[in-house]
Image (cartoon, rainbow, N blue to C red; front, side):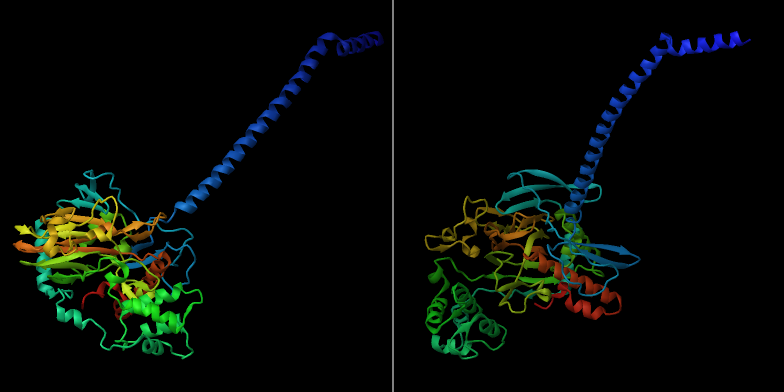
Length: 503
């Protein structure tokens, strides 16, 4: 029995030390080595994909940060009859003016104003303004960027707008042809020497004229002895002075220049804006006629601008031109200067500015009737290679006087019922905001020779200063919230929609 057990033990030892068992053992070691190599390769692949994933997440966050929000400066959402607005248009944070149902935010990036591409003169593009229908929009010029949209309104809508204007009542335009007596009446009521003017402006009588003293005079209501134009010239001369102050000698040179005729001191054309027509303003907000509200919605759809910008802009202006009525060449908007502020954002503007001006990013003009003869709108220098104000005077004839020289404009369009014209009054600043005034947008209306011309103008007001525009949007949003809380009268007193009703 013991011999059998010893044989079994020897056989097991032989199996352990034998070759057949060693072969699979070596195979197992080789398998472990291959497994280690594969594990290291798998780890590298996983880490690469992990880093790529992290980079994609960072890129997505940056994309959202820089692209989320520029579609609306103020996005208004209506829920259960209540409106709230959020502002995203300033590059720096602005203080909250008042609590709202939703917190108002001003983001770090600039809001972009949409601008339609003209492509080339004669280019036709399809635009969707009303449901189940497309309109053709044709590019008329690139300087200024000008489009024509036939059939923008229906004939019935044109008729309704004309009737509403007649019911509201038309008033004579304020600007008319200045006669010699009127031109003389525009002169200062008193003739003062430069020394006397300097003494009147020098409030502290220290012998130096400072900017605050000029601005203080500009805010007074009894300064009939110094025109706003002279004030601007004096302020410009003061800002050019290295010391920031004007002595009597410096002031005498600046003031004498300011008293010369503008054409003589600048060499540029200066003609009085002249027009003869009758007009009125139609409110397009809540409670107005549904046709007026529809027109505003179409402008929002056509321009792709935030509804808040359009809704807080000026009311619809309706003008009637009868036989012989016209308007001389002019700009719908104004150049921005340090001494001016936009009329529509005056509530959030600088109270020390000298003058309020119109700031109109674009114009949409509707023809409410056709004209048998005359009444064309003319763009004098459209698509000129360059703009030269001196070229507006040819052989002693002022081309801006469309009453006499209407046929000399580069581009003229005859009024056609239901047709709309859209043009941009300003260039882009290169960052998606409103830039300098487009000098090629100079336009006027030719005299009506036969028939009656009805036209409506809708402007979108934008402040060149995006921060000031944002402050204005916040202010109006706050006022709307207060109106919802029972302060309706206070809101309507601040709303820009009533700005022109009494003009």
